[in-house]
Amino acid sequence: GPTEAQEDLLHSGLPFDGQTHLLNHTVGDYLFQKYGAKGLLECRDYFLSSCYHGFVLNIIAKGGMPEVKNAFAECFKKGPTVYTQCAHAIGHGFLANSGYKNLTKALETCDQAEAAIPNFTIFNCYDGVFMENIWAVHEGVSSPDRWVKKSDLVYPCNDPRIDDKYLLGCWSNQPSLVYQFSKGDLKKVAEVCLNVREPKYQEMCFDGLARQIHPLTEGSATKTLELCELMPGIKWIGFCIVTNAVSSFSVGD
Image (cartoon, rainbow, N blue to C red; front, side, top):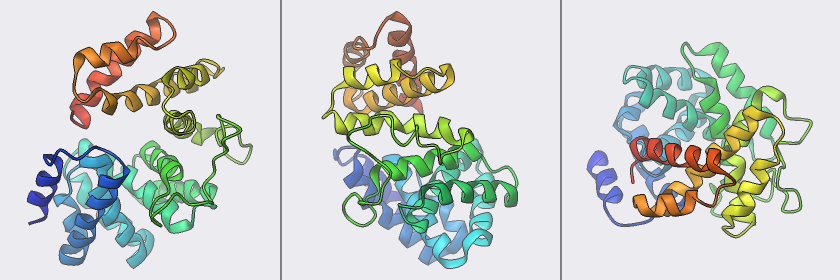
């Protein structure tokens, strides 16, 4: 069954990366086709909530916002761990559905969801939109329409078309993009974060960097300490360690 399939994939020894994320989308596809909105409750948050993402893409394609509302209502019954992941997955779905060149439209669709859906956690939706923009792999390869620039490591967070209310979601994901473009240079990512002037965005950038480090540690406390030591100063070293500890509980290691 679909639940056991997710457990088997989790314990298969495969890496927590974009490929296993897409592989587990198929479970979400199956659950939607078999059970409708209630099937979302069988998803687990493994591999960056990929089951949720596959499911939500089907929901949007079938019935738009009314179907999204019904699915989120089912998620809400399972508590904050589940419904925040659902809101995040919905953000992914909004951008994939809108088209990668339409980043601001997808963010505005999150706002529409907040207005239409009781208890909707808006930040998680924004976060999902920006994460989807970074990976953009639902077409098999990264879309050429995604908002990224190798020549500008803070783009799109500095794009004037993106309203300030969306920027925490942007900075949450920017470290993953810088990590890609710098070929895994964690010190380079930390340098970008350190140069962010607004304190709340700077902290969010270091939060994203610490979460980028988490899968690299492979569950090793020694490796966590080693990689967090690359952060610029004791404040951000400690912040990195705490964030990794939290990630170990929230996504596993």
